[in-house]
Image 1 (cartoon, rainbow, N blue to C red):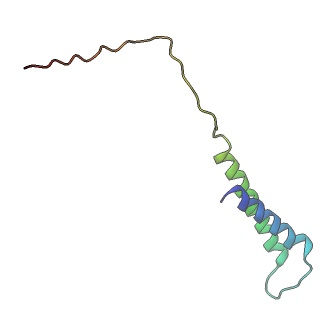
Image 2 (tube, one colour):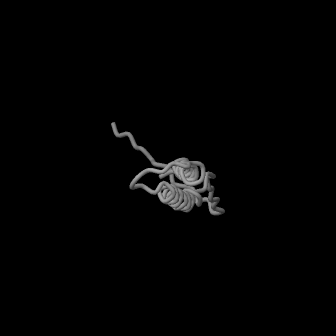
Image 3 (cartoon, helix red, strand yellow):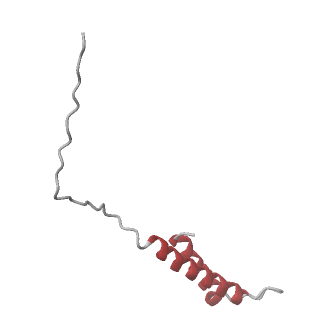
Amino acid sequence: MGIGVSIFLLAVGAIITFATNVDVQGVDLDMVGIILMIAGGVGLLLSLMVFGPRSRRATVVEDDAYVERPRRRTTIEE
């Protein structure tokens, strides 16, 4: 679950919980909205913990010691 899906679940859960006033027999819409908000919050936290620490920069390690490699010698025999 990505960050976008998590925010979407949070928004849909909040809309279902706080903005609707519909009674459906056998389903508690307030509980469904709360469950969606919890799932979105957990997904958002996990996404940030997994993708947050990644660095977008390349790390260059410079070495002070320079080692010259010997050149290959090719001999042509006739």
